[in-house]
Image 1 (cartoon, one colour):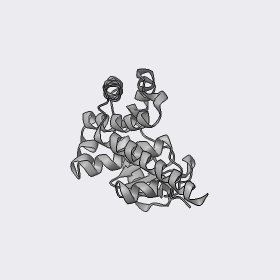
Image 2: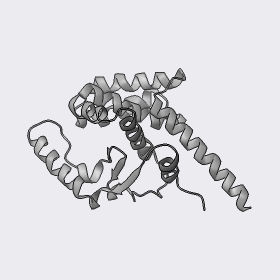
Image 3: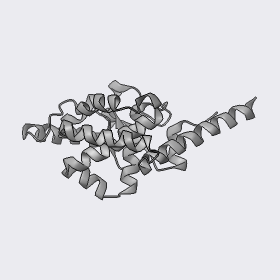
Length: 190
């Protein structure tokens, strides 16, 4: 039997662990801290445990309400997006997490790179129109709408110019190699 893309990615591209968020004590602590910082008006996120997928280092925490989150799951747009965060963290250890947390500018940059991964994996999304549709999603993260829109437009233009971010390239290449392995595995089993 062929392995799932998350398992392939873990073995061949970057360490990865996928966890159901509601089973994580760590995520429950983060949810409490977010509740407190929302009261302090740092952000507007109020459904962290049920709506948001969270990536810290090589761990992706997914809410049960959005499907089963495990290493055997099928690749989805959200999974590709979160794998982008895993690679960003790998490409900039420690600095990535600090810049993401402390700077709206960097948060917008990193999120736009992960949307670029989505765009690369789904060709119909490689448009300014899709970028404009996605931009408001990041306003609750404390990112001004126009800042996010500009970042996403830049990522669309990078894709069209054939110059995507390194994380995007790594995921596209990994997914292509995984699909090639699936074809080989099918041929061997026939």
